[in-house]
Length: 289
Length: 180
Image (tube, rainbow over all chains, first blue to last red):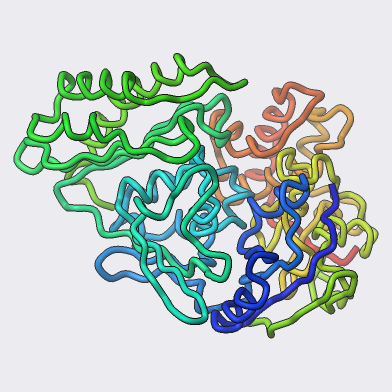
């Protein structure tokens, strides 16, 4: 339905945006691409008194390279999806982005906005956990950096305070001996996945030294399958190893039933995706964009 | 292009400049109004349809700076400085249809036509970036648009007809964008 009235602010700098957040904090929501906030407002799930549109802030619009990739708060999904730097530094992001919404959504929605929204069924929060992203958070009095593992705190909840803005997210470069991919099962392309996996496997010289299995669509927030990850380390990256990890995943994830899939089905496809994802990620080792 | 900072109290309007189908317009827009509302009510171009109004159905898809976007998932004020093409910007003023329109017409792609404007805008962007998509790529490219009449086969047929028409048409894929 139509949006309710709100006070609209369009700051032209981060400092202006932070001053507005200091003043209006609890009553305000930040508008970036709007692909999550505007449906929330249309459905009256949220009704902010103040909307702070950061779309005119040029300093938030860049992707920068340095020890990996730093994506500013106004970089749209489509831009990151096409970025050669992102593909080279962090191929897992490039693998994830085609699954994010539909094309029209990716043309407007922002990578950082999706992370701040913290939907447990969305790809980017799971990618942040898999890669070990660092959140750059600012208020008018301080800036701080928060690890992805501490940032996501549950159902649509993050450690961003009401007076703070998530200005950028830094993703460390993927190891040259690692491979990564995103696999998911949904009824229709770009629908929310019934279960999805962002995974990375680092196996120099034929032995797994680290693995990340980051699931989405199976809990109120993205979740790492830490037991299965630990079981992979020290093994050879082969189908037997992957099947053992898949069994652990199916036994340790605790998804709920909903209208789209039963918990038992989700546990089953989580195992299938574990085998599929690890095999695909392994095939990517040594291949860089 | 950089926009200046602005603050608009609830119920008041903000002055924006937006190019719609080739015409630069200066409008006073209430921030709560979606771009779709602005297009339909302030500019009286009712070809852009509103189905769900929360970003699911794709009926309101327009081209924003050349890229397909949901007009219901944007505030009108977010289009300040942008270039918008709506369904009305596709045909020539002499009535000659855009090749994608012509193809959908020939293939009888639609029944009730509510979803038509969104499908046409998405199809134009799809074929501009990939002039010969496979059927799977067509279905994936149009997955953000819902049709409750056809079951989609006739729409896929229309896109395939459009591929052939565009290949044999020197006019190309870009919307004419003539003032309406």
